[in-house]
Amino acid sequence: MKALIATDGSQNAYEAAKLFANLPHTGPLDVHVLTVIYMPPDDSGGMAYAWLPEFIQAEEARAKENFVKIASLFQGEEVVTSHLICHGHVGHTITEEARKINADLIVIGAQGHSAISRVLLGSTSDFVATQASCSVLAVRVDKLPQTVRPLRVAIAYDGSEPSRVAVDEFAKSSWGPKCEVHLVHVLPHASLFSRAVSVDLEAASQRGKELLAGAVKQLEPGVGKVTSHVLEGDSIGQVISDFIGRHEIDFVMMGETGRSALSKFFLGSVTRFVLHHADCSVWVSREHHTDNA
Image (tube, rainbow, N blue to C red; front, side):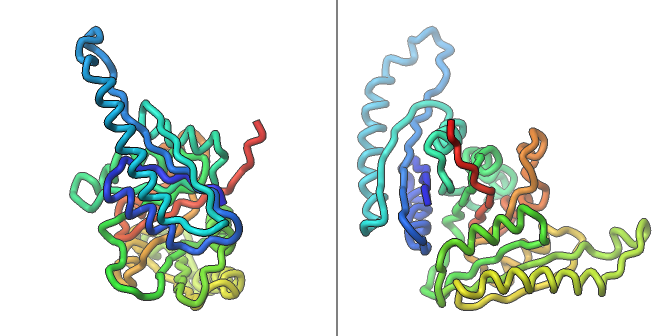
């Protein structure tokens, strides 16, 4: 796996890197740490930029110290770490550098659950999760487990190609017996559709169970425990978010719904909703395409 860890030198960024370092990995792990120093636009004819060289020097020195701290999290011959310092728009630079190195995953810290951050998530992490061409793990540091226990993962699964990609990506690593996986399939509440179409919820529930059974079979060899759940609700995103809270999930894995210009903006209403409202970290899974350019 090739991963890009985006850091701004904050404790949140360090804790995000630490979470990723503690996750199981199969095969060589190539870690690239990226620090982006934001360069504000100069609209004062250059007069305000007299302080810029000193500022950049200080930021680059801090970035190098932070890289050493993050690199120390990764040990062993299977891990290769490198550091890149760039200047410019943070979100654009992260997604572009991830594309250049053909990253499989971007790891980035997300803000906490203030009223404003529930909407914005943190402008950079929200931008990266939406615009990246690879998978993104947005780590909500304020929701990391405080005690040692099995890792609890929820995977939203509806049988669609994006959800199959998420299961495939998760199954690539040997998570081991200390990982609990909850596969979640949500049926839209009958009240939303019964006026327009005839919905046989019992049959739909049975189809959901059959879908989950196939995913359970795929995941069981690599994890300690897999549990499937067929749920109902008016809002799929809200049902998933509520489930996460009740079961103290550590991170949820979801596929995205498309790559059109419109879907890049909306990311898929369910995935976007969970990204903003779930009380845990969110792994947005995307199918990896090798860039041969």
